[in-house]
Image (cartoon, rainbow over all chains, first blue to last red; front, side, top):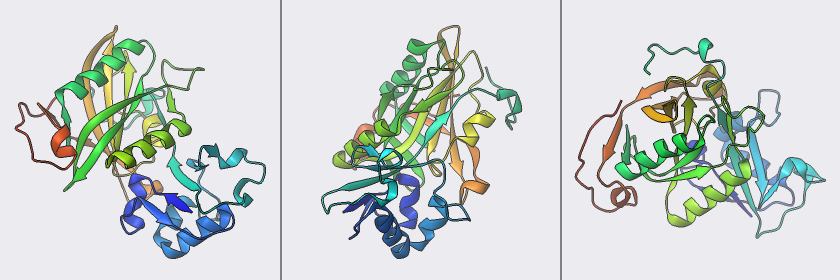
Length: 104
Length: 164
């Protein structure tokens, strides 16, 4: 199966945008990925080994968190596993920002 | 530095005007060449923060998966994102920093005052990892045509320099 690497993590995956792995489950696939490219580990997992909250995993079009077996879901050679860090923000809490100058 | 075509720059600002008083958001596609992000195309996204769209934005991960897939097929990559600040300055907020995770990518912010796009700034998310990430001001160059060199062909003459 193929794991799709997002732009910021490619530097830790030999600059590849996709990595081919041979695995039975999503969990195995991620283990093989981080074994082959160990520098990825600290970007995907917290120090206590949990997947970082902002890292989304999509098996083809499905959010792995909502699959019945989650990371133990079986995978096929033709599957794509996408790693997608979340995109969010907004002007909320602007007053607390660290900005040096204000332009408006 | 971020280089973007006049048409895409205008499209981003127009998006902010259309969604006012809510925040707009989208993705920047292109490629990075010697630390310069060349934007060949912007993609509008929906803001899923229907509970607080006037001061928050969020792009559905499934939409990002689709955009990332289409970008790979087209031979480009995600080089950044954009959103608007309705009736607020075009500077990053603490929320913007806390929820930014694409280190090495550009984050464009446009201030929209009473429905009119005003200032557009870009900030580069830098750092080694999540724990030391920070935003740095990023110069923006609006070019007459960026698409060709962002897709790997010859560079085009630029008509203007920094915007701010």
